[in-house]
Length: 163
Length: 309
Image 1 (cartoon, chains in turn red, purple):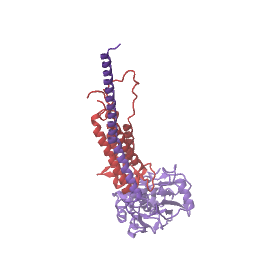
Image 2 (image 1 turned 90 degrees about the horizontal axis):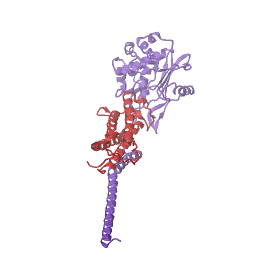
Image 3 (image 1 turned 180 degrees about the horizontal axis):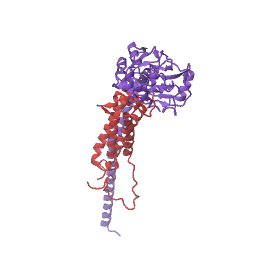
Image 4 (image 1 turned 90 degrees about the vertical axis):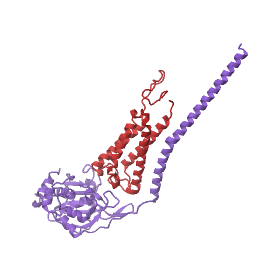
């Protein structure tokens, strides 16, 4: 590949007159880490006591009702654990080091899209099967959507960039 | 003075440079348009699609289309004799073998004014029939209190079908009475398991004194989170807020199956319910001066007493 790509670690140094490059916070990485924390909390609660989730317990908002329902596992694997594994994988893929591997872009996009599809499925389950919403789960779902948006934005802005 | 050929050459060079500039601007414009198309294809459309799907789900939910009909659990009826008999006469040998059981959260020691009635220490239970955690706790409370006295008029019901641990089989204190020479008992079921409006139909009311006690001691720092049910005050000495064990062990069982399992010390139900019952018994014994001795001095209760704070 000829030319210089901003994402490459071996990018040409900036001209001496240019301002020193500021270390940019990678939004997708921040969102993935946030999702990681939320899903880790849900996983711990799943394996300890779902009744202890810090979440209001009412007719509409009821975390324990959602996380202890029959829908809280998929093929015998707790959904919370699946979420944790997802955010672990995505955190690696969208880490600053991960973004330098442009060949992983399709994996990033497909992974983030799979996360959103799963989130939409779980929102459907909450609304139409469990009849309750879990605030922590909603936080994880928002992270999945935000992750997809940030990954797409990043890919769209560097796809076919010079070089 | 430049010659005419020089002028021509300069003019040609200028128009060539203008054309190159125009081409560059055109290329830049095309690149911008490409970038906009890429953003539209890669970013805007998928994100809009997600937002539309979520909005559609919410609209369908709010409009009520696709809602499943509310499932009302069977209304509370009188408990079957064989169930009451099995629960109120769990063999002492089984209770001794179970001891403190497994997965049982002990009550919390509290320094509150003694809770009494008719000169006897009193146990106050506050719950609701729809509540799955109350459903689990009632089994243990009935097993424990049956060692000090006798219930009559116990109901047989199940927790709400829509809640967590749906339709957990249980008994009900609504309309029940209790007699004992050593301890008094008050069982209050504030709501039924029948859906009414956005909640459940009201049932029993707390007395003003018990309401005051409930609001005072069912709140931090006495318990971890305020207002939880079930709430059990054992003579002002120990508090239970929330189930002592997970209702999961009762899932899918009938009342008869639960009652029968209480006499099998190896069953998960006995390990949870009988274990919690021994712990409650040990707590009650601290208020009855360890009477009756046959109960309070039993191996199961003594083992459970060690878990009390």
